[in-house]
Image (cartoon, rainbow over all chains, first blue to last red; front, side, top):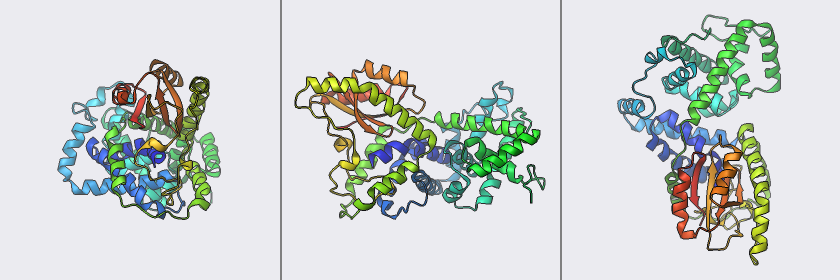
Length: 166
Length: 249
């Protein structure tokens, strides 16, 4: 269990934090997730990678935790916990650094869009794996990521960053 | 029917266009990757979009890596909770253990595997001399590399794909060559840690790698009593390249 924990806990924490946008909540998620892994290990049939299974549990736990809290409260905390309050995407217009603007806009995406971008780019999940984690058809995975990227491009455009797409 | 590279209706991605993010992340199967390569060679608009995707890919990783790591409290909380779980009867898991271990390693991402195995191999190599010296100097000391599988299978229940042992603390992960009078910790380095930085840290702390698994290393701190482990943990947690440090005793 220590090995499993050592190998996956940072990614679980980061995935959870990007979803719930609250560090304490994300830390609490870790023990909940791995306790579930411990309890449900016998049910794991090896049809997917261990990390895919753990991320699916993390997502479920994160969404449940978010449901338990009021949206408004979460939104307030989100701004304080993750985003630099002085820097909404519009303000970062003047930012010379496209990378910085991009990161800022990535935090401004909806939960649905954040999770799919993180799963594909950071957690290196295939179309099939994302479909398994999020619980949607593979074609929906592709189109959802496409729309997430379009939304990101809109935010960047609003922030004064043109990248030639779309 | 030939796959189209561009959007068909205004708001829908083309078949190849939709695959570009996975191509950037290297998670497409070889057949689809080849299709994307062919399309990229023939379509400048797609190349432009791919450049934008590569930026997104890089910055998403950058953003996630900047989120840091959880505190050791999360780990303590988890293992306390596991300790509080009712004990379960041993199950006949031995026959499929190796298969599950193989599945576990097969499930690791190439990036993770490359980092942990290369760093682990180099570290263990670098530490081999020190370990050998300690073994010679300390008669009666025995060394055994970390092997969670070899722990007594007192509660070897089926695991997802990795060996699952019910031990609340990492104490049984290795049989240490360390005399009982030296502090031993489990340490995990950040994924972006450079090997030079890690070796410098080991030298600074007079630490030796005496075991570990994956990217979790078991370090022995020469000259530090077990009672000083908390202070060493506190110092290590201030190190930029350390993601996790917890006492192993």
